[in-house]
Image (spheres, rainbow, N blue to C red):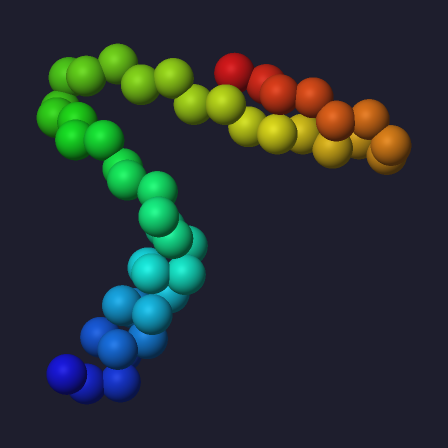
Length: 46
């Protein structure tokens, strides 16, 4: 395994942790929520 593959594997493990990404296919509808922080306030935008 070269250094780039090793770094990618480490970063993937760090980002995902114990979370599992559900399987999805082309044509599926996904809903994405983004947490927005404006000053002291926080909100979730779909």
